[in-house]
Amino acid sequence: RASAVGAVASALGGDTLAAELILLSAISRVVLRHGDKPIGKLALNLRGCPAGGAVAASLGATLDALLPCVAKLPLTIAGLNSAALVPKKDYDANMLTAGELQLPAGAALLLDETVLEAGQLKEAGVKNLKALADLATRQKLAFVFGFFGVDCAADVSIVSLSIGKSLLPSDVQLPLRLEPSAPPTGAASALADEPLARTRGIRLALRTEARGEGTGEGG
Image (cartoon, rainbow, N blue to C red):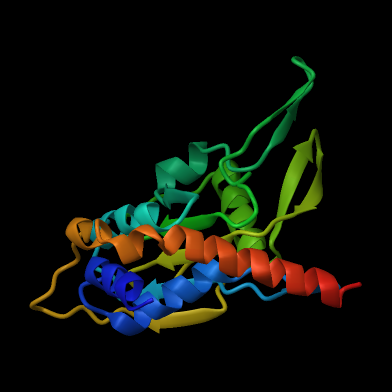
């Protein structure tokens, strides 16, 4: 555990508390739903990140080494206006085209708002932002069929990085505290250590155990 926290903290410029919360978010899952509210998720926003994506790059590389499935999405105006984030039915080809947010249960999604620039969101961009907000709050992803969407349950842990207030809702907001003597780095050497090489297996075991307990409680 200490090795994993240390590696993530190195990627965050030495912020151990933020590293702990990121790992907690990574092992969080939806254990049940109360109406439309998912119970168990932990969407995290780290604000106060420097502009330009340096923290996202170092954190993303570290999470890739620790977790089995990590999706990274830089949030730019151009990207939001053009990205295909949600699955859509192609009636001409009679098939469902995949969306970038169509992720497996247990995946981690890293959102980088530090590269966001001034600009105008088009209709597609507004819809993509809403899809991200729905995933963060309701753990639902809409599959679009023509003029209507069908909500499907998701189980994706979300960490967003922002300079100031995030565009997206979250369960926990934490200011990132960079140590001047410890700029963000991809902790490549630390990740080569044997304890960290086992972290993926530990995380999968924790999630599997939690799912087993949740299933038992639910009958």
